[in-house]
Each structure stands twice: as C-alpha cells, then as structure tokens.
Image 1 (cartoon, rainbow, N blue to C red):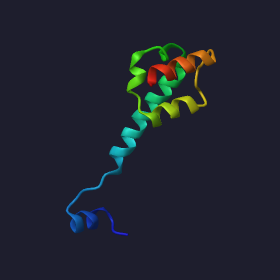
Image 2: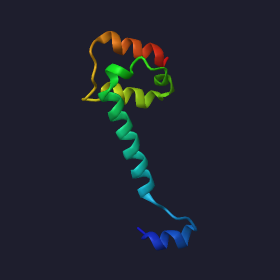
Image 3: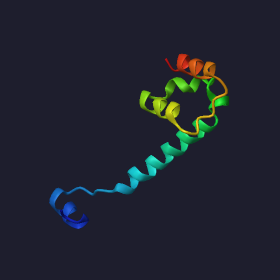
Image 4: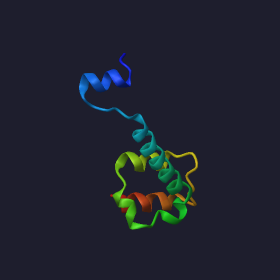
Length: 80
C-alpha cells in the first residue's frame, strides 16, 4: 500500500482522514447531547431535520433520557 506521498504523486489528490474524524466527533457529540436532553428536546420542531440514520441512533443511544413512551411517540410524529 502506498504511503501518503506516493498516493499524492500517483493520483494527484491529497487524502486526509483527519477531516472525517473531526466531523464524526462533532456529529457524535451532537447526537450524545440530543440523547441526554431528549426529555426537553423531543418537542422541538428541529427534530424533523434529523435524517433517519441519526434519528435511529438517538433512539438506540444507551444514554437516551426519556421520561415516558409518549415522548418517543411524539418525537417520532414530529420527525415524520
């Protein structure tokens, strides 16, 4: 497998994994924050802007802070 310099010379492109890692960390932090504050945020209309993969991740999050099943149903309704 070519190293970074060989890759750049062969393809003319620079490859940087650090950008992906930084974006992933930001998304992870946002999803964590939403999960921890779900009891407050489930009624917020912004929830409809979350894509299906992110919404599933929030609902599956082990730290999801939900007071009742009705909150999840309401959030799902707003998301649709």
